[in-house]
Length: 254
Picture 1 (cartoon, rainbow, N blue to C red):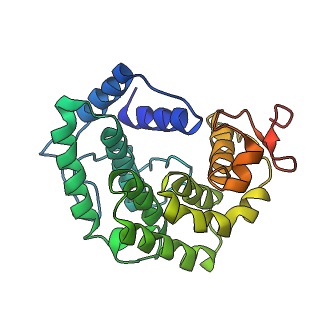
Picture 2: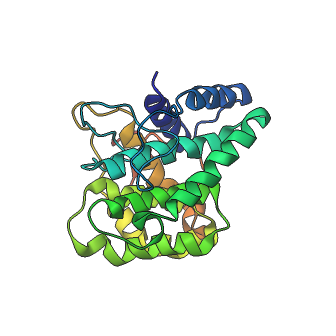
């Protein structure tokens, strides 16, 4: 299994409510660290990864955790690196913490030099890269509230500028699921009616069969962060699918 495949599989497992043992976390850390790029790999500057540069696939882009279908290397490569480092930050055992902390600190410094990560750029796929940055910050730097609020402001100011891929909004909702509640709650209120109006998503040809369950869990568990929905929807447990009209777990609409 490649580092990319492991990163995607782990994300899906966690979003669906799965848990990992300490040995499993250590094993994931070991495999991801082993995928770190060698010093002689050509780096393209601060707009692109420093530690985890995706392997060349004849210009084919790597898909994001929530599919946003990257058309540029800026989104594809930054998503690849930031999502891997995010998992390392979450899972690193004691003997790897120093190395991972260095990677995180250097990556935060790099992001501050990018237009999408710090300078409110929403042009092209800098807009989508800003969302990936927001998710990264929510995990590795949850106290940097001003930085996260800046990324949210970019999203709210420019999301409706043009028609965007369906995964863009879902990726933002994933951020709202994971952000500190003080930051996330007003945003969830802002988007809750759109969440509730989402049609039940059907699996697309060639797509990971778990992806529609990932989407269902993102919507349901993000809404559950609001008190009025947590009482209706019950405990934060894995879903088979959500029923929009009744707001309850069901097996009938897969």
